[in-house]
Length: 343
Image: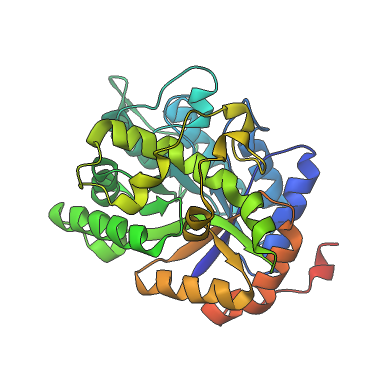
């Protein structure tokens, strides 16, 4: 299993870069960032800095969207980063959440998402593509390689991931929900004539190493509120008739709204409806042994990467313990570097 660290692009930008360098030193393979241009700093600018100051880490957005960025510009950004730093990028993409909703917009349709994946992937892989009634190709790009991973929860979005994505991102760490979503993605891949095992699976959720469970839950309760935005859309579309697991839909019954100005932040006042039980299911909290037990369950389901959100007050220590006690157990080939290399 590989490991990623999910960062917000809060100022000062130097701290985001520093955390990314720590992630590499502790054996993480990926650094992901939020992509919400009003709430946080521009991620691709920071990606360039991170790539310049690291040697191995792969960077990407978790997740971008087809609404706020022109598809060809997105592809050009990745192809440029790949030319400069050697194919160390990945594109996480979804229909759009805070990046569009904070400005009064709405998530794109699944067809728009499907079309954008085709355009971004072809252009960023140095190939030609039909876009806007023209055949386009970057004349300066050669040898760029980019995988596109799709974030999804609902049945139709999961099917899209199985049909066209290089990877599937599930933003919660409940093993029962993960089992259903992974099975749905793989069935869709097989129906489309693809190798189901060729679609990589990334589970992304807050990770917090500690023993004060009350404190850890309060630091990570925001995540259930964030997931609730997507689940509310799913319930509006599919209802609660049983097509979607109750473990995913039932917890938003008391949800009364959401303030995107508090999006992704500990202490989010609009996440009060998220119970301790939901926090425990959706996140990975506790001792290294607690983390390993849940990670092993996820790995047995076919999860290729766990990406840990670090929007809490224990970022460095959580990454250090992962580097010392978690990652080597899940991926013995990875050995953390000496942190003094980056201090």
